[in-house]
Length: 127
Image (cartoon, rainbow, N blue to C red; front, side, top):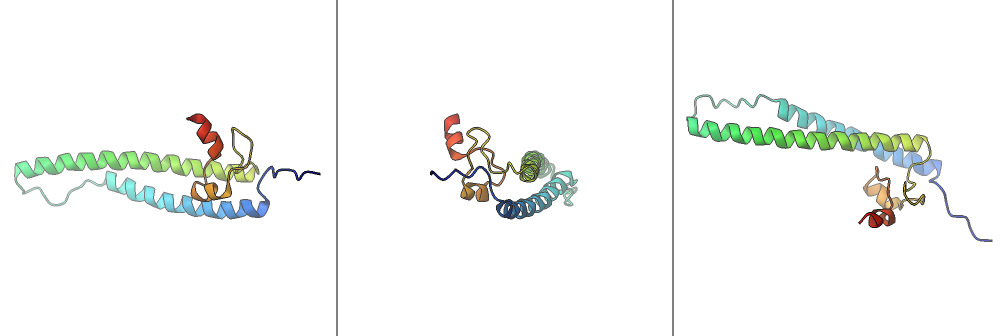
């Protein structure tokens, strides 16, 4: 009699992933707060009395920096949302199951990308 393929990760494995994901959410939230404070900062570094040319360069650089930080913050928010969705899948016991193939996603992949919803096989089919 052939051994049946495992349909989902065990509760112990899911608990391990939950801890990993919660740690990543905490770290990502801290990083997001740093990004937000960086682009919400008025940027006043006491350059009011410097030459007008330098001030123009400084303001241009500051604008680019704020835009970059805003983009990073948006990506970080998406990452946190994806991690929280992974926690929901853990609760539903569907975590680690590829949404295309229905097979288990490799454990090493989930350790590297804990919010993954596609197996490598499914990812390659997208190309």
